[in-house]
Image 1 (cartoon, helix red, strand yellow):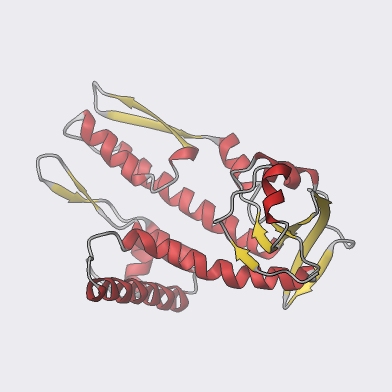
Image 2: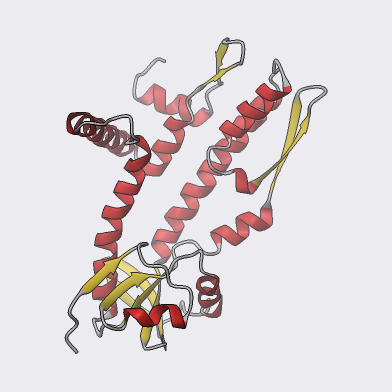
Length: 271
């Protein structure tokens, strides 16, 4: 069948049900099934036994497991690369450990007000607030925390599973290649977007922001290469170097973690 248009999309099409997908039948579609759709998790859980010799192929030097099923005239292809999962788990728990250490340091600090306590602690979570339960003592301006182990398990159990939906007969390994090439570009721009807010209203300003953002990524890539750590590890460690600013205007540096001290020492930097 010759399709008039081929769509290779990552998130611009919302697929919720069989009825919702019917309007795509006139197109050659390759799209990723979004995690926010309930059926996404169900497909993964149904296929947790896919990691065996019947369901693998080599993608370059990488081993990838896959399983496919047909619904509503479309192919649903589940991919799972164990090597990428190992890296993702390491990066996640590295960030979680770094946040725990920072919170432990904060537990010994004195704050000027309960508002300062909440603001400082929640900023320190750095995107991991869904996995940490905080309790505040407003009288003594202290706090305690504990990990949400079930939430962490639920999150990590789904790491690195990708479901592609297509009505094309293209081989699974070619579909994976097409998706990854497109996904890498989209992720780069989605990561850059927060740094390109509407402060730059001219082409020159936008170009300047793009240049600085790419420069920052390049420096982080060089740092991660020199130190022999992953890009995410370098980003997590460096982004955690900060200071606390109180409502009075006073500020104080947050004590460096062991990893941050080692990075600064190896880079011969003094802040």
